[in-house]
Amino acid sequence: MEIGDIIEIEEKGKKAYLQYVKEAKNETLLEKMRVFYEIYDNRPHDVKSVIKDDFFFLDFPYRYGIKEKGVNLVGNIPLPDNFQLPKQFRTENVFGSGWRIVNDGGGSKVVEELNDEQKKLSPYGMWNIPEIFENLKNGWRLENWI
Image (cartoon, rainbow, N blue to C red; front, side):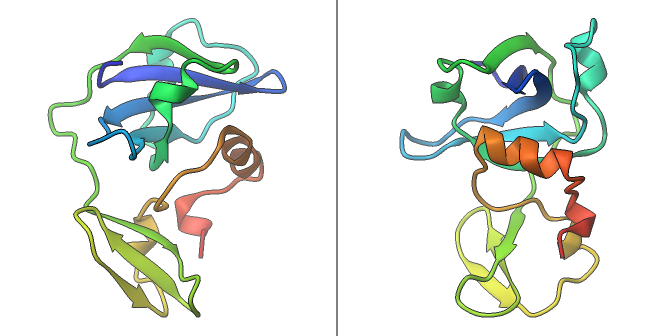
């Protein structure tokens, strides 16, 4: 496992691509991945073509998933020099209305409505492979997740 690894996840013959961008700090945490929105019928000839400016971040069990059927390492593309991980993520507030804005270093706050910057925040937590495909097939996007 190296930062920049491109992994292909597969479900029902369809393929989606993620890039490994942050190592888990310990065995109880998951790796941070960039998830690209496009779903493919076939693996592109040039794996670099899956890298788009259009993506979101998720936690993903890369070190465990790579051992499973349907998760394949297909290449490695170094992260851009100016690459930065987000400092905040968001999730629906399970204890009431609104959204929970979660800081990467710990702590969170609840907001009733998202401002324009908060609408660009990636989900906090993990999605499994069926959940990733279900959301991508249904046109899920950060800006529409309100």
